[in-house]
Length: 512
Ligand SMILES: *[C@@H]1O[C@H](CO)[C@@H](O)[C@H](O)[C@H]1NC(C)=O
Ligand SMILES: *[C@@H]1O[C@H](CO)[C@@H](O)[C@H](O)[C@H]1NC(C)=O
Ligand SMILES: *[C@@H]1O[C@H](CO)[C@@H](O)[C@H](O)[C@H]1NC(C)=O
Ligand SMILES: *[C@@H]1O[C@H](CO)[C@@H](O)[C@H](O)[C@H]1NC(C)=O
Image 1: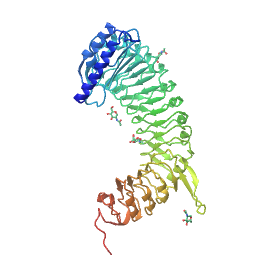
Image 2 (image 1 turned 90 degrees about the vertical axis):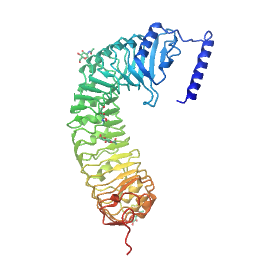
Image 3 (image 1 turned 135 degrees about the horizontal axis):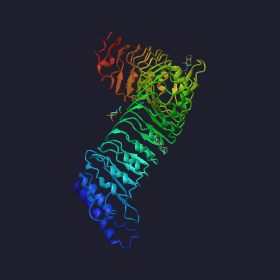
Image 4 (image 1 turned 180 degrees about the vertical axis):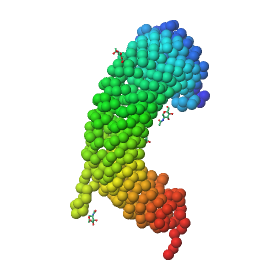
């Protein structure tokens, strides 16, 4: 902060302080005198912090801990500290506290809220003495450098509802005793080094709505009893080493809105009852070893689902058809990196509203992709068929690369006017590049490489001024590359291995 800004803030504080002292006698609700017991406990915390670049603890001077100390709040009449909320303002490189959590915090016996967040360099263990805080409802110690185990004594905090220890360096197993804190509604221990299994005693945590164990080293099977925690809305077990199958019992969680099991070692098939997770907004099971087919019935009940990621598994069999508008809220679907087969045309039809072509004489049908669908990734499978005639949709990202798709690029692809990224590379697409694609002015990324395209790159492509990446490599294209930015500036490799492309960045065309 600038010196002048600091001085200004100091001046404002001073004025506030003076006016406060002056009006003290007439004030309706003067801040109560600070309890000496609580003041001593706070000073104990301050003493444990060797460096404070946030400026917060500099305000902790004098006797008035209820009025003047930043982050400290007291009961209206009691003078007892009920909340201690310390958060480092951004940027995190510059604002931090360095030191340890003093056990003296356990002396703040009226405390209901304790937040020490994003202090970056607060290390050491979580003091056992915190278990004396029997009135504590919220304990947030996220974004520090706390190490050692999660103390089992936290289970004695009978009022505890919200617990977050995310983003520290905690290790060891989750304590069994925490299963005795029946009031817990939220547990977040993401981004630590915790290992082992989820203790069976946690099945007693019937109020639990939010359980985030992501980015740790947990292993073993996903416990079936999680399916008994009827209030669970968020379950994030991603990026651990959970193995075995997805327990079918999870499908009983009717309040579940977010389920992430990504980046684990889960095998077996998807439980067929998964379609009964009616409240689901987001389902991520990518990067596991799941096998079997993806039945369309799975999707018929997921009417609120907007995010679906099944990428990087061993799913096989045909792409689901018969979805029939079963996913009306879908915004993002990623089925890439599997062994899925089946026709792209049937699949897109099944996902879409099918409209008849205005041109009755040809009798063809066009597919209108769901308006909310922005991201569709089917890359790296064994999908066949041809892209169907399209009538539009709000798609921004379409990746069907690395499949066995044939046919031609339908000129109606230009109806996808919001498209920013189109990847058809590594397929068997024939025919010419439709000139209509020059109307896709939002296109930033176009990869048509390694197909069997013939003819020219349409001159009208010079209208595609947003284009940042294009690749035409490995086709049978011929003729002059559009001689305008950015097409004449892309690397030569983007045009290599064609029949007879010429002009910048390749050598000039021969005049015949
Ligand atoms: C809590 O869970 C444990 C272990 O599953 C069980 O033995 C105990 O009876 C449960 N306690 C309550 C109060 O339900
Ligand atoms: C998985 O967790 C580890 C440890 O927290 C982290 O370093 C890594 O970036 C995470 N990986 C992913 C893909 O999120
Ligand atoms: C789906 O998961 C994969 C792998 O875990 C990831 O790379 C990809 O970005 C995810 N897709 C979407 C649309 O978020
Ligand atoms: C309608 O179909 C006929 C016959 O295939 C074709 O010649 C004509 O160009 C089409 N018109 C439109 C508007 O697509």
